[in-house]
Length: 152
Image (cartoon, rainbow, N blue to C red; front, side, top):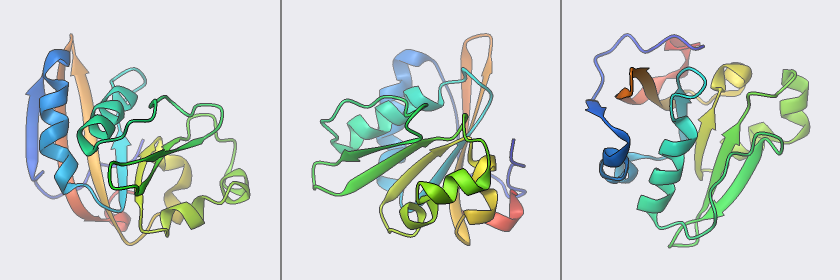
């Protein structure tokens, strides 16, 4: 897992699953470029991405791209949103084979699960959303404009 930024998060929130849409509505307008979602398996990264996409106005079905590695969705304004689940990524060469660098440099919103698998391809500045789960109580820490060198 990536190191968390040293800076204080711009937003911290404790929430339960029924509050997830509300949290996503707060986050969605602040998300641009490459957004890294970090947290243990099962903490709710994909679930949060679904809620963020809903808040942005995505009408496509949002699902984990576990085997495809990346899914593309269209927002209400027809912008592309790329959702990466890199858990099954074997190596950096495989990332280059599917064009990870082109996606990350596209200027479109890129929501990345398991970003430690592509840390050397991350842009200079990223946004980090760190999720933890403590007996069903989820905690979120939001770090916008974070130097990638601070977390890799």
